[in-house]
Image (cartoon, rainbow, N blue to C red; front, side, top):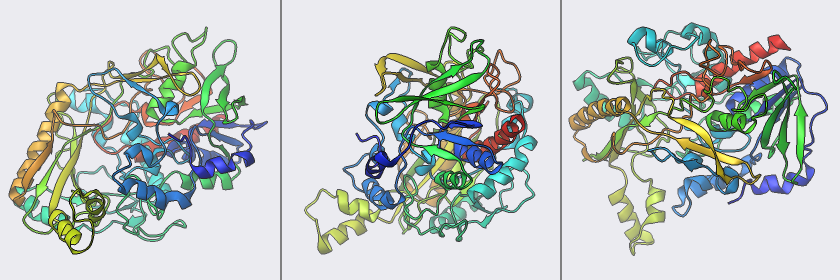
Length: 546
């Protein structure tokens, strides 16, 4: 499997990947957190270097990547060139975790293939122990992030409406109007009204109108895993803005280890590799780890030393532990009328009515009204195995297969448990000879009951609507939403956490972590807006130290 786009390979001879002679800040990772921190600090006049393990993809290649997604001969990893020894990993938990379907290595990070849904966590998500007697409280509250949530919505460009009565309080309007409910949303709305279930809009980080130099959504319907038009936000937006402010972004520069001073109190440099086989040291005054919830703990564990025998920033033993994801609950089937699915590639309506009904038996969940049930006409045409390969016969087959599917989804929270963790597997190494991440992931009874609760609500709606349900994603047939959280949790006690409430590591006074890995609990809402808010907050804290 290729580890970079053809464009990146063609340009390698022209790319200077040697270290910058002077850097105020070195950031590891060019996803949303790294890009936002880079832009904020470069705008403040600081010298910023960003090291990204993957390539810089050419935007002109996106239509071809969309075609890879549509054609049945390609798997999900093919779209963004994931796989091979560079991206090797192993599983050791009760549940298999498909890591390479969950991430993208490259400038822009996983926002290159995300769906683009953005929510503020609820106030109760920060106070699980205080309010419900379960899990843990964050060391910060909703009010601490409230101004940064507003900034993040502006930076990413969020289309939304203030029509969700269950959402946390806000004063500022969304930057853009919400997308209109889809046709199938209107079908769900009739059933929900009969059942007393509230529907409301879902905020999206995609343009409902032209904004920030990017077009309005063109309706390709392939948002996950690729938006050819660029209407959906991805972190290349802020990479470009950071570079315009003087930041330097080096692609295909995977960091191998972090080096510290003699006492082990301060980071001196990160060591990174380049495609020519060389290793380089990038020094800086401050360092930010923004490579996601798997690679950040892996890098800290790879950087163990005499002073830090269990890995950097790991005096608590919490590095890699408390790995969380959101679990998928859903069901779908056929309706005896047109549903117009696949006209919209993203969710326009949700239900958070039952989100805060949390106790010892079950956690939070949200309900999603999907707009992409069943195969698209293109998928049907390309994957048909019958003799109807062309013309009227194929058109009849498509008509018989497409158009009456409908489905619901939902995200269910997973509590933090120490046994769910990321470790190193020394028996399997990557393309640079480093132990690969090993994922220990399992489900407990509490999240199984949460999935059951979500399924019960979904079944009531589908029954009211008259859907012939033919698939269910339930407690015994679920999967992750690909939201990596919790592996370098924040806290005030250095014996129980990895970073402070301002996201600086307890053990190293110039090392910061901007990532969902710092989440204490995961809630049941897509995490990217919270990642962005935390990144902006961390950037302000770093600026105070420079």
